[in-house]
Image 1: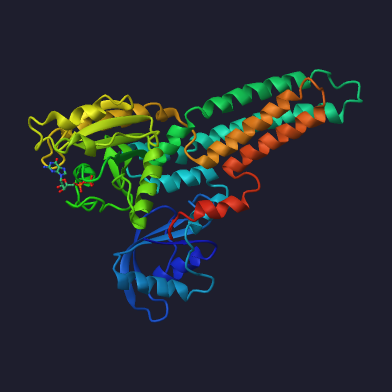
Image 2 (image 1 turned 90 degrees about the horizontal axis):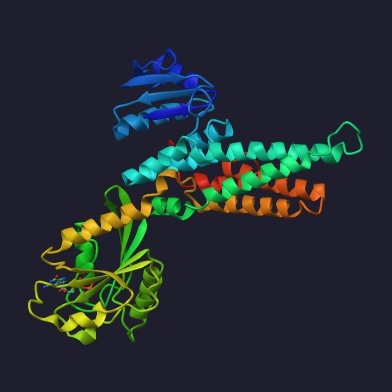
Length: 435
Ligand code: GDP
């Protein structure tokens, strides 16, 4: 589909298909090169006059047959029309924002919807595209401005006899109420962000225990190099899994062990860092190896949970030697006996992982905050409201007003109502051309 937006969109249609079709009605049309008159393709043409279009401007769309030569021919013909130029990445969405069709949080929702890999991510992105947090933030901002207006009226007209004394009290009550509502919305913030990025599950353990084999089994493809020699997985390999609709980023960490090789040392350092920040660590041990090889998970693994996976069960019949050392470890929350090579025990492990993800994300359905940017804006708003409320005893109305104004500004930045030039580029950077 080739899309044209702006005041020359109608002209572009006239030049290419000889007319402007009825608004919002798909019309079959021959697309011609305006210079030579040669037919380039037969297409469906659509016409969305401003302002009821996605960008808020006149928009023309041509649904073409899509081969390279067809698209090149149409773009070339369009390029020769005065005032037409190729769109920049994200420019359609940017114009929609500038024309008030979408607020910033909705645009972020759109970007997330395009990037969504699992059904839960898609649902969250769609709610945001439909203005879930944006509408709430606008509601909060409107109420804040009302509270601010009361205090400003009190300041401006304090000398006049007919201005009531008690304007400040209701304003502070409103501020307190808003503060509590916004703070409550921050409670689930981390989960909303995690749903965007995926729950981080690190596979860790001594070299050769079968971590890469396990990752491949879980990912059902050859994502990590499996080798019979210790210490070959030098970097952190990451695959994204969809577990029952929930996103999980699975990390294969380099065999965590001491080494003299500087490259390997770096791998080990990264492995510890990533694994240390994970939500869940799968600590893999080799049931067939002697106990000494099966180091225990150490303190650098501060994950909320550690599961112990006793691997190579296929080799270990009647060889309990390695078990006890890590089994008694108090860090371990669950124990699984598997064979990454044969697949034995994998169903149970995958089921448990899916349950874990489900449990983790069970409360995200109502989560408003999906990005660090939202969280920061709301945290700043709460902080400003706290400062306003702490001034209440002092009776210094101009200081209270100042803090309420600051709170309204941070909320305005969230939806893009005020002063956002600096964050626009960051947000639109993620879009591709034609969006
Ligand atoms: P890593 O260093 O922990 O990533 O270990 P790898 O996944 O590279 O595996 C080391 C060796 O153990 C390879 O030769 C694997 O084929 C083998 N291996 C991994 N899992 C199993 C298993 O469940 N059973 C058997 N018999 N061998 C395994």
